[in-house]
Image (cartoon, helix red, strand yellow):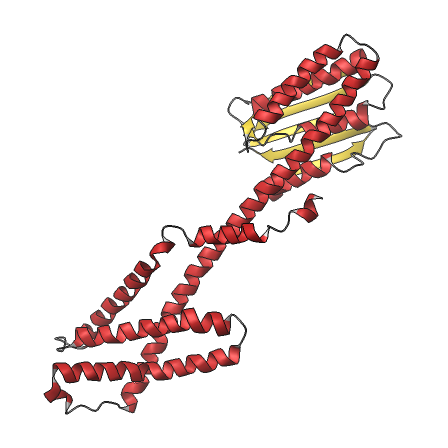
Length: 365
């Protein structure tokens, strides 16, 4: 169910995430980015010009500023008009034609404004200068291609980073949503099993029923108030497992022997909640419940070298070889582990010598 229901984030959620990314404080000052970029470009152009002409000619600062301002304007036309309406809509021919016209017109506009400025600043000198020459036009075309292309490349690089961040936010939202969904499935599944246990004892009028109710209260308190966090102390998770085992021990009595051993320092370890319990639930559901003989349940937990190792062994009756036939328990825990750790964890579930054996290795957070 989780594999088909939650793979797509609702459109309104995706749109909200995109809006949040685009409306961050830094992106709200987009105009400042543009100003700083074109000011840097202007400064580098002046520096290059001064290297070619010593000293700098009169009016160079103004004519260069005119050139850069017009290039910035044509860049905006290309970036915010032509690319969204033509390139992104796959009208490649129209985009190529429009871009070519843009690059042809840009030098004419630059030369026209520079000539008008020069005529205003020094009309006597400008009377001796041609307004247009093919050589100057070709040079201006090359400069426009360089300036607009460079700025567009920077813009695409920035958009790529933004889209990457947006995708990460979407994946994070999806992960959190699916983990909540899987935890919500786990809790009713566990309560259903435990309530059946209590019901069986009440039918027998067992004196153990009140004690199981108290244990169940502790279990409910943990699940309702603590297991909703992304991580919980391993010590609390172990207490939760022990309470669960105590409930089952009271139910099955002396024919059930539980061996629960631990190694390593667990005092500062944290893990995602409600993962280990499913292996124990599965053990009781398939290895203990339908077994009428004496039962040994072996559990070993070890913390070592940044990993948690969890090993469970329980009998595998001949008539019940398929683990978790309804697919809720182990399917969920596999999915959670895949979402949380990917290929950084290993989970091996097998039947060997009439035993169900579960071996889990997962990295510690």
